[in-house]
Amino acid sequence: MRHLDHESLGLFVRVVDVGSISAVAAQVGRSQQSVSERMRRLERELGLALLERGARGSKPTEAGQIVADWAADLLAATEAFRTRLDSLRVDEDAELWVAASQTIAGYLLPKWLGTLKTRGANGTASPHVHAVNSVEVVREVQAGTVSLGFIETLDLPRDLAMRTVGHDELVVVVAPDHPWADLSEGIDAAELAGTPLVVREEGSGTRQALEHILGEFDAGLELAPPAAEFSAVTSVRGAVAAGIAPSVMSTITVAEDLAARRLIRVPVRGLELRRPLTAVWREDRALPDAAAELVEIAAD
Image (cartoon, rainbow, N blue to C red; front, side):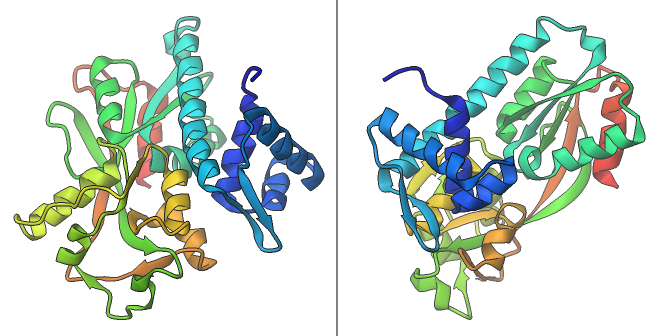
């Protein structure tokens, strides 16, 4: 196998996420034929069938779902490497260094940064974003690798300055053919805790929040061993849609899937699945102007 084509891998991860080659082609400004050819070439290079193509879209094969998760990890690691390499070459004062949990980095932070640019509040500062889980965000802020972090957990660090910038609702989601999909009355907390779920890795804000909420609801409740564990939000969504198991996810990440009924929301009786979104920074260091303005924008 020759060197991996990161661009094709990125397109493949998008196709798995969206479920449509034509939709991805429209997103990236290419023809459907061009994206389809890239997918076929990737399959030839890897020696694997990655996608099942049909009239209603494309979905990953079993091997394709695994490759998509690995590819997401590889692309994230590559971006992190580039970001850290850049940090060795640039003037720290001319950069805005931010670490954010995956949900915030993928769905909220781009809009906040766009507003920051529109206001001209960042001056000449170029934003650099490292998307990791909430535990890693806290570590990077504590180490001084970044000026500002955004996390989505209820387990807040005591040694950092912080500000709540919003709240996020978590929802239980299943595939349309899952038995829970037809339960209008939903499930209870014990059934949720006792069911193996598709989860993110240890340290993710979503997983931490769920464990915290269940523990506060009933100290005797513990999550069952996972049905599957992934390090990327898109892979969790794909695994749930493929029928592997239910999951608990942010409404921000599954809004389109719920609207299109690719995933079904399952109520949980008596349990409030809600968590804060929090900006964190070191108390012993003044926030750069651009970072301070970004916190204000996030909280607005």
